Image (tube, rainbow, N blue to C red; front, side, top):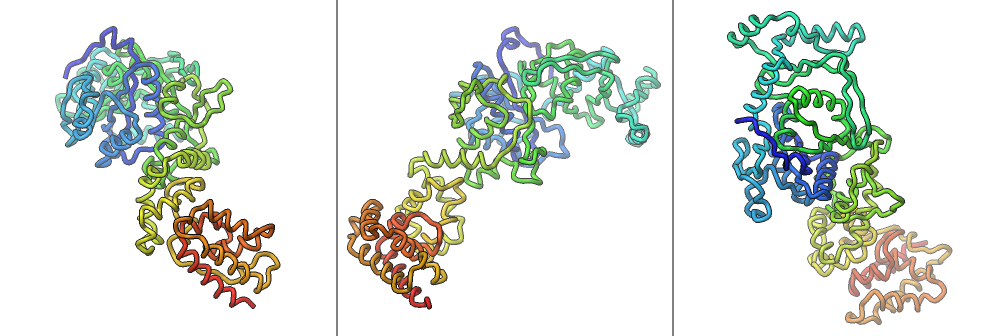
Length: 529
């Protein structure tokens, strides 16, 4: 694999990349990084590259790449270069053929598209080795043969002296060129380290954080190539960004301390560095770093809970960014995000992952779903509920479920809540007789109220059984004592103190079931003393 050269056109074009590791399900923070890169590329007519950083084999999780591709496709954060599944390629080939096509050597069923591949780091090992050797040849890096035991002892001594653990350059200072050659011929294990220049100020302008200055004396002679032939993150990251003509590196704040190391590598190679933008950390409500110990962090966790794609994307976009300039808009489509997104309006401070805000956004999107779409998305959530499993066949019908959803639509925070607060629609109810009592009502008052409701419902024909007719008829019967009529009726229909209105509930239950429950309530009332 040779070393490629950039053309002037490639250097000028906006090119960004999302480069996750295949270590499990996609973290919500990683989805935000992907989204911001995508928005920036689309806003500026650039390219969005997906690259897989899979050189840390100890953390590799089987199936992670396939999962990643599915989540990005689901979110409509679509890359135009990088790995794709063969199925995706077949479906979307006309819009994707922007470069060479090659099958992955490492992952079955994965195809890579683009002119800067491979886009999977484990398929680029020869390239990294060539570049590391080039640095050694030019005196910018050196071989280190130190055994792990010596390195650990060195770090222990430094910690005891309250010094930052850093390599002491033993191999650079004490091993001659002849000894290096002998060790190499004897196949002694080695790593290649960057020779960090001394007393050099490293400065760069971060698009989000502004000017940053660091002294090179605080930077370790980092390992570039490990003894197993695999590159470290630092070498692979810089080489890949250069080879793939990346113009802007947009990544999480946790990579900010690595940026000076990367800049030194760009300088060692004589390459132009990209622009950097480091995104704020995601925080829990208590301002601690978002972690699995305090809640869900995988995108799929939220999908399984019934959060809509549009709400998740909208919410994640606002974790650290807003349009500014007094704009109070909070609901954004993906196209609106592309239009309004600006890296300079991303905040420096950590962004709080507020579930209440996500619930609100999701509820707004649910409210605006057409009933047919809401039914399609809710079916699997109904089917997973115990109360649904034991419900009668008529209560599982499409017509019945759509009625339930019509009532619940404005009350749902997420789709996993369907039916949870209105199980009375699906199962027989029971309740203490005292619940039928409204304020100072006597037993006779309760029975009279239930009988009045029963008479009203009996008079309404099946064809006239609408929410409007039910509400009109019951309110006319109640007169100016609504509580006396509607409270016992609500309890009779639901067995609950709080529920949708009795007009709505009776409409969903239907005439026969409503009258059945009223008769049950009359028997219950007889138990009152």
